[in-house]
Amino acid sequence: MRIRKGLLVLGGLLFAVITTASLAATDAKSPLPAAAVDTATAFPLRPQYIDVPVLDTAELDKKFADVFIVDVRSPYEYDTLRIKDAILIPLTDKNFVEEVRKLREKSATKPIVFYCNGKTCRKSYDAVLKAKAARISGTVCYDAGIAEWAEKQPDKAVLLGRTPIKAGELLSSAKFKAHLLDPKAFEAKVGPNSIVLDVRDRVQRDTQLFPFKEQRAQLEEKDKLDAIIEQAKRDKKTLLVYDAVGKQVEWFQYYLENKGLSDYFFMKGGAQGHFDVKYGKVSFGEKKKEAKAEHAAVPQKN
Image (tube, rainbow, N blue to C red; front, side, top):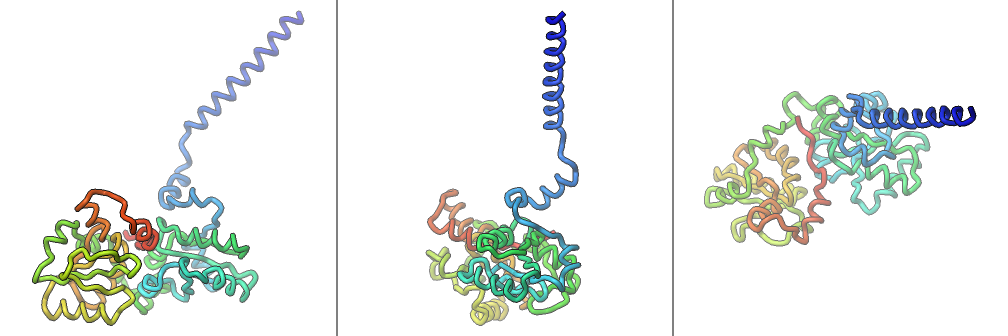
């Protein structure tokens, strides 16, 4: 009798174990809820920054007057397109923490919202982590970025110093691609009927891609840029522009369009793309610095 009872108990335990394992396996195979999948697809970096609080466009709009909005991108990107009333504190600035701390000293409770270019840009996430590491409380990431904000809230965005943004002023991805050439096609256009412009900054520059055939001007050097643009228009020459890795030129396109230039092209992949085509995909000494300098410097376009 005792043996039979023991066998019944043992059988019950085995059934429970098998059932639990089966349910667990079923759950493991079950797909994630559609909303979770959509969010992960739309915001691919969120899973890497699970400790960073975020808010969406509707939430930021609702709290707009009650938060500090901080743009952590470069001055050039800020001057091109930004959220209205945003404060510029580049993440790369050596005084970043000190400047953010000054905001917190102005108000102990007012949230500090960091933003950058868009859903694939890490800077806003990293800004929150950097502030947290410095024990600065109340920081949040607006990871939809300037691209979505400018599209959905044009009355609270600034484009090249103008606000509100008018319909059609935001450049589409198709518009950019229409002015994009692969490195071989770009090089084929270099000649007497074109002007080549290198817009890399001094840190990124190592050598000229087209010796004796190009001019140089950083994106912040507006006087030099204006002179070159006017020369291209006056002499009816095609302006061929390249940067380090093909990201900064997307912002420069706004400037060229604003100046009334239509005959221009960018090199796909920038200087690095040129080297990849010419020598194969090798890692040059400057590549890491270039990638870091221009990471997520691209607006998310529709």
